[in-house]
Image (cartoon, rainbow, N blue to C red; front, top):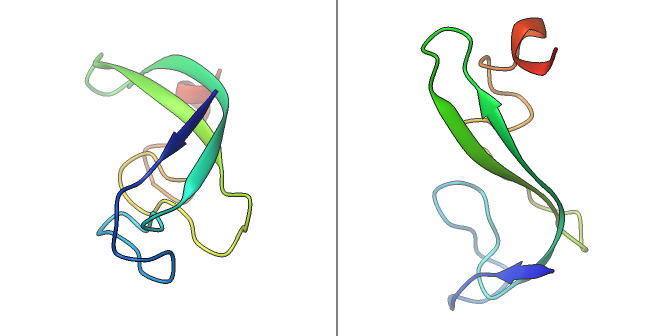
Length: 72
């Protein structure tokens, strides 16, 4: 499976750090429950084939929401 973004040229990114006019491969789809709020999120793990930009919003790899309780 794959995903992609609309226009703007692949040298620009949106507010979440995702490259515009770009294709992504979907590596995994899963649900995660936030241990603090008990809210369940549906998430996709996607790969940027160019590897030069990355998602930078909620649940990004550097988000403080990732705790041992969330990934256990």
